[in-house]
Image 1 (cartoon, rainbow, N blue to C red):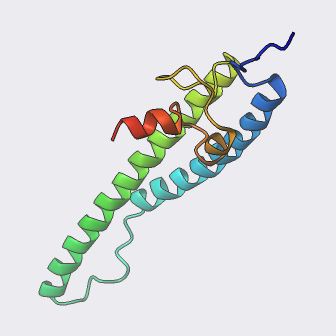
Image 2: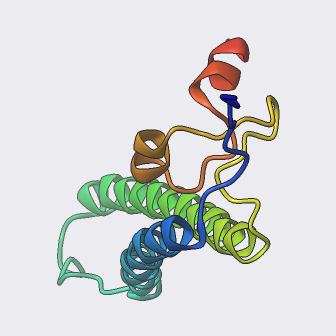
Length: 128
C-alpha cells in the first residue's frame, strides 16, 4: 500500500540550516544599521564654513535630503532585522517555512533567497 506523504514542516536539520542563513543575514544587517546610525550621528561639516552663503544654502538642502534618505534606509534596515528575528522565533516554534495563507511549505529556494518570508510564491502572486 502506497501512502502519499505530504510534508507539513521542515526537519530539525533543515531548520538549523535556515537558522544559520538567517543569523548570517542578521549579523550583516546589524552591521549595516550601525554604519547608517553612525553616519546619522556624525555631523561633520566637511570644512564648508568658509564658502559663500548661496553654496551653503544649497549644501544645507543637500545635507537634509541625504540625512532623510539615510533615515529611511535605517528604518528599512530595522524592519528587516525585526523580520529576521521573527523568523528565528518561527524556527524555534517549528512553524518556519509554512505559508501563512496556504498552510503549505514555502519552497526552500524562496526561503534561502528571502529567509524572512511568510508567504509562498503562490500566495504572494495572489496579492497582486
